[in-house]
Length: 142
Image 1: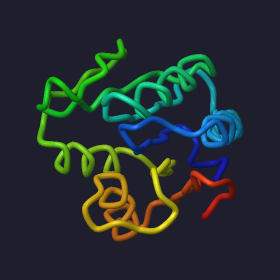
Image 2: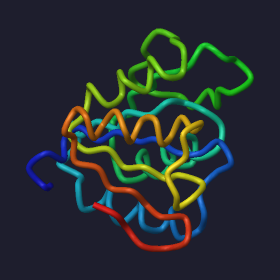
Image 3: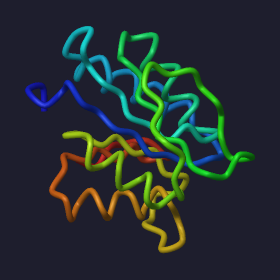
């Protein structure tokens, strides 16, 4: 995964990450960091997106915000690159299309049909991206 570290995407629950997910995300982002031109693509939603962007910024990633068109769901994290607002599932596809690696922090271990995070993971699988799922109960699925 190190060779593909320059573009990393993130998807996660609006409820926020568990302490374990935050710690593991920091570990993974640090390992993937490829220098000052490394890009972190996220959805700018409340909860996990805002938490992950803060971690990525602290490591040195250049933030690329892909906001949704639902104002009340946005976290409004300042980013160097802000793309046009889009419907959530459309912008999630844009995030996956822009990256080589997708880090995901779902709220449940089991895959859910009506979950934007899991829909993004499924799309990333179809697009053959490297995916790291940070299990909320601890553990990682690569």
